[in-house]
Image 1 (cartoon, rainbow, N blue to C red):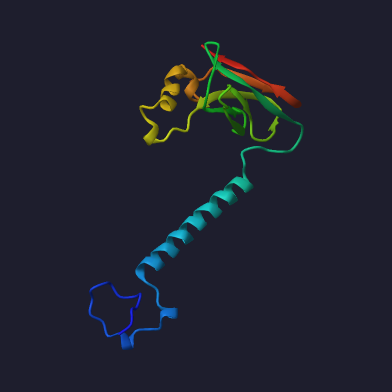
Image 2 (image 1 turned 135 degrees about the vertical axis):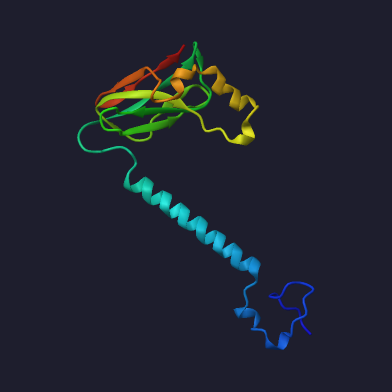
Length: 165
């Protein structure tokens, strides 16, 4: 009797009636392929959503925004700067680098934007220095509804620095 990949180990099976190795799929192989297929579909969906509506309308003049974020004069070492238009809900975000600088992803239509700070911190990071940075930012700047920061986007390259106090 030769080894066959399909049956569960320890089961008594008549191997003569089993399909050939080429057509046999073990439960593990099927689950792996199904998982890869689901991951592929999720990735495709996110790609389509990002490509179809990045949140920025590219008609008319636009501005490219960058700047620096500090808290009481010291650079904010991580986080995301978010610009959202109260008029039409369009906006953009940019990751804060360790030196406090940021650049928004893509151009924004001209206008006034509400600015607020968010953080991408996983549960595994709770209680670490990375999560402690959130505590340094005054709470009012952590949400669109509570932030009093605004910035005007003008045509061309614009710098907007924010010192959160």
